Amino acid sequence: MQERQDRTLARLVISRASAFDLVAGYFLGGLAVGLVQGAILLVMNAVAFKLDYGDSPAALAAVVVLFAAFASAASILLGTLARSGAQADGLGTGLTMTLGAIGGLWWPLEVVPAFMQAIGKALPTGQAITAFHGLVGRGWGVAETAPLLGGLFAWFAVVFAIAAWRLRRQVAA
Image (cartoon, rainbow, N blue to C red):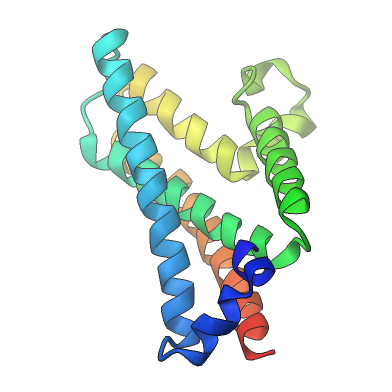
């Protein structure tokens, strides 16, 4: 979004960077930010609150990586949809708050009606928080989290494909 407003996207297009390079760069930058944020949260909770993340660091890492990948892809998609920085901020905040609330980050999904539980569990936030709850509170491992990891990967793949397609179209225009 910012690159379109500053007209630096046009400069990137005439450089030797391909559309793939631009998509990969935006994605990897967002992924790096998400992974650093996730690592900080995990370490701070382990140190400050003595939180035990369970016996499956591989499953924990997979949840963090896949959710960060989804978030990075979603940020690219929002950037291609927004017409201004203010609109991007509003869309991002609105989407984050909505996914958080419906996905069970604000209150347990068990306290909402069954149809809202189904919606919440289908969202990437619901899948991630369910996996975290299972890892921390129920002793889950990779096998138990595998369906949720598959769901997170599906969300990432679909959102990334749409975001990459839209960004390539904007670069070509």
